[in-house]
Image (cartoon, rainbow, N blue to C red; front, side):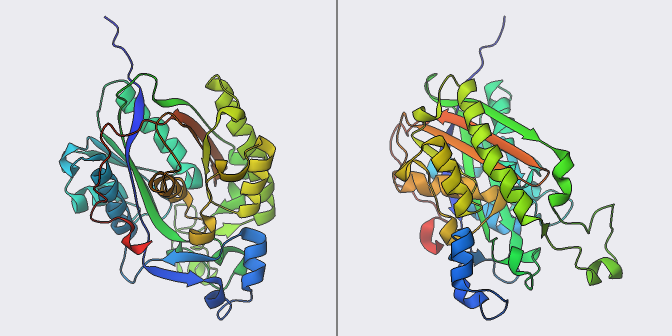
Length: 349
């Protein structure tokens, strides 16, 4: 007898931002740039920087606990933890295993997923498939990044763009078959791999005195080419996933995009005809937090009551690889609105 596939929805959202705020004005003192230059080109006003000794798994654990509290669940309820990150605590073991230990989710299987800024959309497909087929009931999907540890703080073309933070969602079977994830799309083009990368630290260029002297353990980016790629790809992939869902962009209630650059987001909104508050934007507060940016933005949108039961919510991202991804879902509100914000909720953001 064929088993019926289950619809999958987001049962809880959470995020955590480090307390330290680094403003553009402060960056003016250490690098050849200005607040006006940064805001005009990126829309970023400030970003968060992790405290001394704070790790990516620390950020992810706090976001995870927040999301679980929002879902009304305990760490021991989690079947699987997937952490999307390009700045893990260590190459191995996985950051997911470290988060599992910190939150006490000892029953959960764990793995990391590295698709850079597209990580959340890639992870969403994996998480959904496990629940949809009945293998697991509860998946904790986390995006966590510490760019402050992998940036060249003398390079104004990159250091002004990124920030630290973590977001998380809890995925569960939907209560109703007309709610949950409807369609998704991911892709990649390895021909653009050199456009955004960290050249040192792997098997290609193992750590050595020479790689350190050449600053090969810092992020390197061809900003102009990435911008051209992003503006085209984000529009195309949203249209493609909406077609797959049997909808058009006109059906989107709110788009929660990867927060990379305000000019990219404005271009996408204009091309898709999504005016005003139909695109959620918080890049001015946090900068680009890579795989963490969509779950952070989603959590803020939910808590600002920008998303309600039955809304059509779309996600879209692009990233190193080059990679891209999009998803669309019909939002499922809580059966009974929780008043719990969780132990790691909004106090620092």
